[in-house]
Length: 150
Image (cartoon, rainbow, N blue to C red):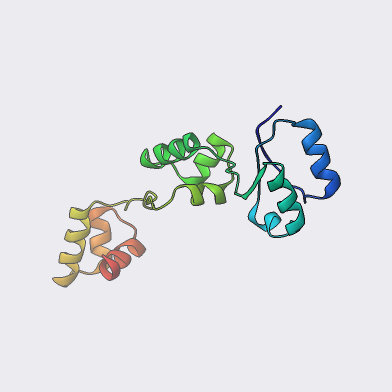
């Protein structure tokens, strides 16, 4: 039936016979590298004599279209959690498939740059933090944060 198959189970003599019976026109068998290392050399030689190649190869679970969708969603500003819920792909896989793309930044500051500069300037001029907070209608704690961190 198939000319090429991928197996995930160890190749035993019984398994080889089953595979050959189901696929008489078989030309190539692929398997995970860890499994390939455990196949006895005499089985590999026997399959080679029958004209069947056995190759170690990882089978990709996600296609290139999945990677493109993930990258598109990241460029639109979606978070990995949102992407995972949309695509039904685990979050860890989203991080892996995004490659070297940067994720969107965290939350933007509540107060714009001009307001923060004015707060710092007033603090440098010696205006008490409480008066600055009242003038800009900003919580006192936030005024101290802006003065300290910017």
